[in-house]
Figure 1 (tube, rainbow, N blue to C red):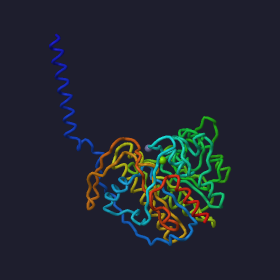
Figure 2: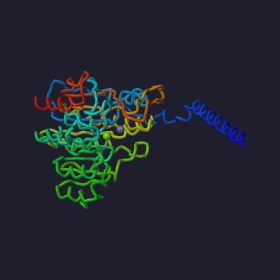
Figure 3: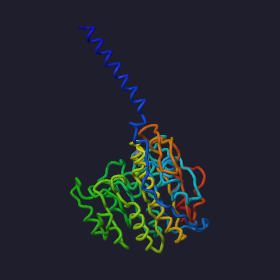
Figure 4: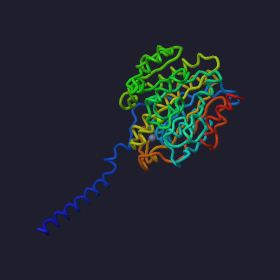
Length: 384
Ligand code: MG
Ligand code: ZN
């Protein structure tokens, strides 16, 4: 009996070794998520950069959540060597550590980018003592600029929340939604309808927004109708779908809408536009997810470039909050748009992230500096 048990155990061990060996040998086939064959190519337009020595009147900040250089280069490969990001001539890097960790989370990084102050991970717009910090959006609002935030996640998620709310913990979505009502923000477009309506305190914040004079939009296709005035667009109950799952051109449309509506203000405007889900593709170690979301961001950047090239008073910044996945581009073809990547793990990394700048003031964003320097640089440019 003992022998039978032992041989059974031996066979089990051997077969598990065989399985292990098989999966190693078949790693490529099983790791289909590492490879992406793009089929949705687009032509990139090139624009003349306005004089960088002028003072910017408008500022558009794009944040690709989790977007490192590999995410950008994989996407450049997938679109056969072309990206709107290639319009940018002033490029730098920012370091991302939070007050408490060498590797930041999105809330602390978002707060650094919005307030110029380092804080602990999971903090939204508050310092290490949980005291509210004034953010760049409010500072510019006080100077008369129209302001907004756009996101492909719930608008209450860490990154957009850092430009609006002040809460000690990023997952307090209902408290963050209520913070929107305490501001004079002119426009916000993203998901998160449920955090405004299905609440423990019984408040219906969408009704309250209406009472405050906001136009309410719940479908991306209705954004085109909005020409002016205050806008609260909550186009998904939680997060918007992925590009691969049919989000369509929501981010491009939201970017155009934000520019069209906010540029009515003669004092200028500030908007933060987040491509949230590059990070989620990084966590999933999925090249298709990362690349499709990054290309989606790039197309939205194209809309901003078209405006800025004509307007000549608009500074565009494209950056990230941190890198996600430890992504490395390990194969690709610039003629076919196929790209392959490997990942270190399913988490953020400490790596510095790129900063692309275009237009008046863009030359201030070259070099290596800290994430907290970005809002300071923007404010200096507006105040000069
Ligand atoms: Mg985010
Ligand atoms: Zn993340």
